[in-house]
Length: 114
Image (cartoon, rainbow, N blue to C red; front, side, top):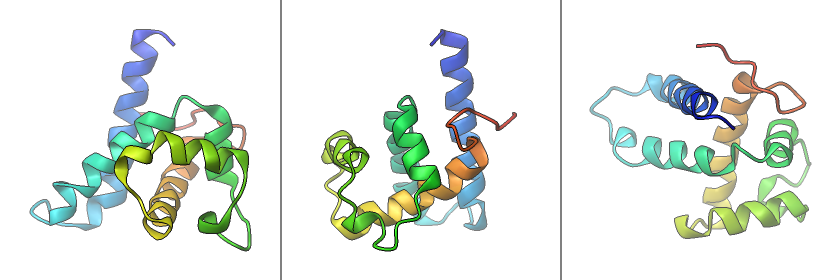
């Protein structure tokens, strides 16, 4: 990925995450911890199309928390430094899913335009 594409993708991530959390006032605590963590979480996984497609299109009756897919195993390794419980990881993945539905098509290609 070229520098310009990487930079553009980071701008899209920042914009989409900020838009998702825009319902909160700028002095709300989510802007100090949750928003930066979500941006970091997405930046870690955004270059793996299989994970993008997995999250974006996920619709398992048992939810993310009980998924045993290879993508979930990969995510657990990539996000291990966050110290997520199953519940907090699942909640973060649902936020990612909402954001990814605006950022990517079903094949994991970027569709969001700045």
